[in-house]
Amino acid sequence: GARIGILGGGQLGRMLSVAAARLGFTTHIFDPSSAPPAGHVADRVTTAGFEDEAALRAFAETVDVITYEFENIPTAALDILEELKPIRPGREALRVSQDRLTEKTFLQDLGLATAPFAEVADAAELDAALEHVGTPSILKTRRFGYDGKGQVRLMDPSEAPAALAAMQGAPAILEGFVPFSHEVSVIAARSLNGKVACYDPAENVHLEGVLSTSTVPANLSTGQSMDAVLMAGKILNALDYVGVLGVEIFVTGHGLVVNEIAPRVHNSGHWTQEGCTIDQFEQHIRAIAGWTIGNGARYADVVMENLIGDDVDRIADLAKEPDCAIHLYGKTEAKPGRKMGHVNRVIRSEGRDGW
Ligand code: ATP
Ligand code: MG
Ligand code: MG
Image (cartoon, rainbow, N blue to C red; front, side):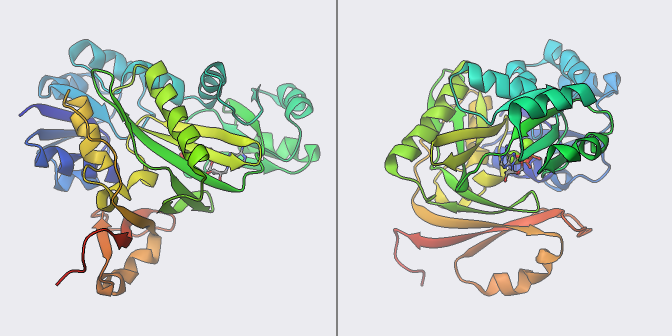
């Protein structure tokens, strides 16, 4: 089997490693932290920073293809790795999604609706952006934000100085607040030869900026579901994408608005582990290894619930539920806000009850 290199050893890297092992591949994780969650299940781990050129080169030597579990990999590291082994998904997907300004511009150029937005580098630009975008709005750092970090809401232009201070000098983007009724996401995949497969849209609920639950089926009409899936397909093709992609979407009275894209397996796709024959992790490994991908068909209704911080203390009770699949990430310290695991509750399955 081929050897798969994964940049980042968090829970996504861990679940990718398990899927890769099941397909007969070996995995090598590259992560700056000494005991990453994926380390327990991967064949090999390199503990080094992304600025360590020698470590990057040595890592690339041991693998046939490189993928990643997070999009904020420094460009310099990618430059080194790209010379040595294929990186999938490719550089264009990373370039576009690493920066919210590039990302929104790309989406608009594709003809997809986004929140109104404007670039903000200083106080004068924020004033101009507030003229254009108005309030309520959200000021976000252009890069490195996740789980709602690096974001400030503005209800009134008078809040501009405080919001700008919260950016700590980082380049930012002002986004108009989208009055959505609910949020959904589409997890989609594209193979090396351009075949596209999409999973059913999931409906996502966030608490304090962090994903709490994903439910399939989502509350969408057939037409809306089709729109959402077609949006994902359009993005995949425009990027000549290989692998799994997550597309976060706001549902509004005036149609679907894309929030952001993630060039990787996605938390809101964890339900596929219990809802589909081929889950997002196997799908991603198949795609980057050049295999044929699965069709994304769903055979059960599922509610995925993230176990955040102390939630993990409920594990004994969760284990008593007969239709609740448990996925723990092997993290020892349950800090507040930290994703410790998730469960997938299968609400209805086509098969008969268990014995
Ligand atoms: P993730 O962990 O999904 O990468 P993130 O830090 O990149 O999160 P966003 O997805 O941009 O942040 O925003 C987090 C949440 O905040 C969204 O899911 C949505 O609930 C809300 N939000 C963000 N931008 C907007 C907007 N323009 N209008 C309305 N709500 C928004
Ligand atoms: Mg994000
Ligand atoms: Mg998001």
